[in-house]
Image (cartoon, rainbow over all chains, first blue to last red):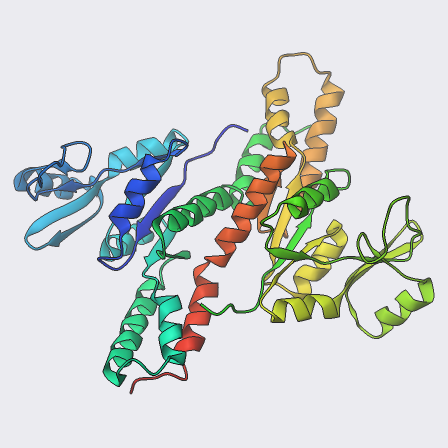
Length: 208
Length: 208
């Protein structure tokens, strides 16, 4: 079947959870079938980072011009630097029937969700869902404060999860990647997406 | 994490699409991690069919008694024989945290959907979604009547799809199985399912 519009796949999660590592692993796989949307930033390149590969590195004035022109899907400022997602690239790739993969912070993901609610939003979670339960049912080796901190952290993450379609535990990078690939395959089979393509195909071909 | 309730997975689709073949292939895979719910029937065993493996073979009176006692998740009559899904087995397996896999006709699937709306409903479709488009854009080799029949068939299938979460094209048995397994993996990562387990775990453990 002729492909419809591609899927927008958004991977996010708490900082430090390993989003970048998972994304790199996904894109190192030979059969990866989606396009990585490279972010734009005003921060300086770190050692080994390549413009147009790791990021598009821009001057502050250039970045602010793109914001004014509405050419960023989302943007945010961290520690005095801008980070954002170029909108044209995302739309052109989706229109060509290719899936686009974004790896962004939770604040940006929330903004993307507003603009593109039919995207696939994946929350990468630390493996503390499993660990936490072990500790709660516990072996009596943890102090009350350690347990209290873990519970509070878990509650914060639960709040953050709210806007996502899927939660993938990053217990092991390879396993997290397998789950993400399964989610993308499944989303391509979603009835609402298939049905729409099917209907479009049958319109214009009414046998009556 | 301790498992919550298992998933109910329902595979259905038009007759002749190859549901049985796909189901057998899924259950011949060594890492299949869900339980097949064996149907009950009043028809006679065919050559090679084993009671308690292919079907539970029952007498008509026994089957009607189970209907009266409400012990079937769904049942239907085809060509003078009853077919149905034993309810106790499904509930016990789900409660034990194991996924249950049903392969049933579309009429039965609609009934299951009413009773268990949080199941995962997969429509196995003939590969005519792809083929049809080829024929519509066509090479001029098909008669108008052949094309008209195909379009009407496609419209009927589109109607049937309506109650399902996913549509899997049975273009090739192995590929259809891969998609079904991906759907099951993805459904286990659905935020609504994970979040619920997470909340239940955190309830009774409030740090305040």
